[in-house]
Length: 136
Length: 494
Image 1 (tube, each protein chain N blue to C red):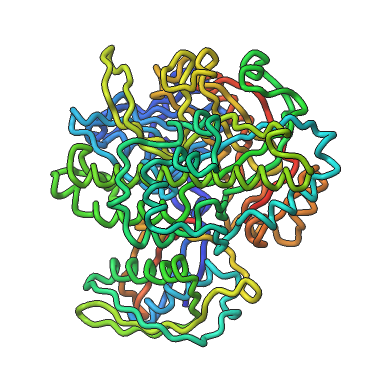
Image 2 (tube, rainbow over the protein chains, first blue to last red):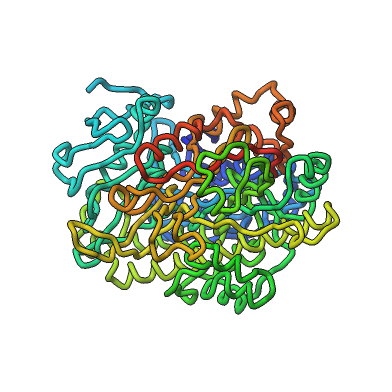
């Protein structure tokens, strides 16, 4: 589960999930919801795989969401669904979506970067929670 | 001091602000043990409540701890919270004193900046064609998220843009000699290192040179509403009733990625060099270290890309005006007044303690404002002072200022950059519910076109401070003096 909040000139994403894998998947969904006005417009017709190295959940989240951003910025890919598996080396993910189509996808924000400000990933009573800010 | 709660529930700045004069406030170095210099914020009583409710003054304090910082840790009156440095933050570090360079002192949008084009047109010439002009710009000029330019630059061309800046475009016939002369640094920061810019940054920038972007970037058709300094206005070729075009954009995805790459690669630098930082977002490296030189080289490359971006936007604007008005842009007198950066770190010589020292001046959401006589001002403006362009919000005003007589002494030749936000994006979106911002602007005389619904809501005038107040403060502080006020007529946004 994610929610978007305002943070001075930028936007923040707060995430809560039962597992670290679900947290990372929802963090990516949160980024997509900042980029695209309505993620439901994205058809999951293409599946792509990602691998991100790292053992620390905080940096893993930062680097993973940055990869999802780069996929849009460089290849104009938008993803609706994510499945993430985490082990001691990092994460492997599959992302389902499609290339940006200006006729069907309304875009909301240009995300410059995923920042380190207030970046926080921690265990909670119900599993995991995280917070990160994206620069608009 | 009483605690202040910010709008997001966090505590605002509760430290000292000692009045120096009616537009300057000092945070003494004694306030915190790790400060190396005082903090100095240019603001007046009207801006103080917001200043206290924002954590930005804490960031001014943090920057005062940077190794090698000279003079004071400064902030302009459009101050608001940022990453590491506040927006409106200025700091000069001396390499000879172990001074550092910090990407947070430049920002993600390296060389975000503005330029103002003049025309020979009056309001009466343009009013009947305003909607066609704005709508043709929306059609012909890439603006908004995911909007790539018509020209995709290959790796060799990108390297040339990053190495040589606007003079490279002059060689391609996409910039005049005057365009080059009237751009800060003549459109090229020397000693750029395009070779250290990552493949990902090149990929992000390949189709974005000549695009506006989104967020607070825009192109705006304006009319000169009021002249405050007739002599400077004449020197700048400005007069009441004259149509001008303001461009606000930066280094696009290439620059954002250069900053992101630097923040990652500098992560371990403070520990390596024994630097203690109060905020990890002030990550930095000594100017005279491989890491520092690497960042400076990449930043300069991105800065030159940004100058080229604004130059290509200029070329496209000229083509739109020519197409809609049926005359060549040259016959319309569409010349460049000046182009200035407001996110940059530059090596400059300044007098510090009576001695000329070469320092790295970080300006983050702050504009260079050199006074009359400075050698780095184009010859045509040297007797007057450097033009400074300050964009306001799309409902109110923008300003042309001139570098003030006290800027070198007080702020390393620096002034403000804009109005500064006072509402977060979500607060602005909430405030926009049930309203038709486009219609409101039109009733106010501004034709606004936006690629996204979010663009207008989040960038509505009410989300910004009043630029007249900000400009008033820097005028009274002697940092930059009012020349002319411009009113928006039409704007395109992402």
